[in-house]
Image (tube, rainbow, N blue to C red):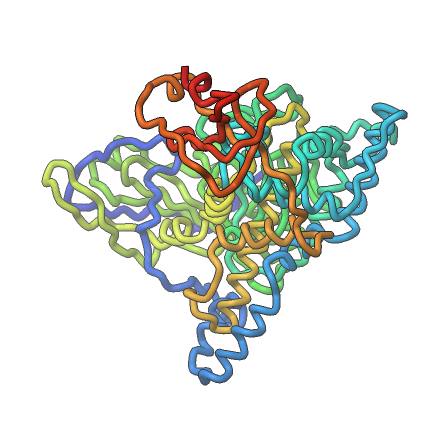
Length: 546
């Protein structure tokens, strides 16, 4: 690509700070970009952009409502339960499809056995899985064990039935032609969720980044990214807003082709163009991404679609750009920056290199270095915080780029950890987590738009538990009174320590807990808390404590 430079548009600006101190290096490639840089005001690139502000901002501008109106808003939000937000994505059609495919898969595996799964039981299964993500135990069978029984899970369905549903949980027909689609086993789930995510109202600031689905089993889709918290797993490219609300996603399954009607600008650039299809160019959305995606071709392609973009960029992807080396910028001081400007195929692109701990280059089609603000950095020599110059383009990147990181953090709080060798199970549980987080963010946005106080809004944990409880109650007017497990017998060390074992008469008569004894007695050990025979014919009490 040829870069056409204006006579006075290729230039450099430098500014140096007073303190020449090198801060500790960071593992991230953008370690010099800090969330502390910049003010809290929303960036508006053009006059009249107030109309494109987010719904939460519009809700906050109506804070002068009366107490009567605010009370009616609380009732309106209360009428929409958390499970309704969940069913907005996992609707009846999707659940019915999973039920049919699971029953079909069971029949294909064993024609003499029928799974007989229905929609209500599938919802109960998902509810127990959500409970397991909150009440974490190392193995799934422990939820039904005598030692650590969790009634929220064990009372919903028997252990063997739960494991049977998990084993035969399926999303697509194995005998159907798949045209070499690596994602054919989760394709119905993707095709169902993606349009629902894309139909959600979008804020002005949007970002694209990659997300890892933890998995270490065998799979051709598995990736290794050493700088991620979860190094092994599946890679998903996600388009979301600054709070983490997902608007689109693309599961990585090899080289990405460009969307229809777009030129091929490389694998990473094609991903951005594919996800950006749902962004309306006439609404003045701003798109942010990191240096894995950035290139001059991408900035030009997005600008031609009416989407201003900003992102970090690698030096070798700036054809014709010539910034100073990090050693030269370090001599000039922390906070030094250089700015260059060029016109590429009729699109004006500005690039700024800023030196903090090290140099970082950020390019944009709508932002520049001005105005310059000041941020605080720790000076190790002077052992105090000092002010460092920070260009406006850096401030914008730090403020609006962390949407996918916020999504990862919300999912990681209560991630579903159900062990399975089947890769599509890992995807299914991940999308359940994503739907719960998306539903909670929509719930918070609705509450904010109606001026519901934060104290009256459910946090993520309460929201998740409410969904789990509602799903577990499906098809049950009242939970069946199941017979609980037998009382755990103390270990031999406790029984034989000869300290504090005294018999007492209990008001309830139960079976003797001495093995091979079938008698019933009201005598109970005060320490072991078990019933034992103690009469003139039997002395199970002494035999039990020997």
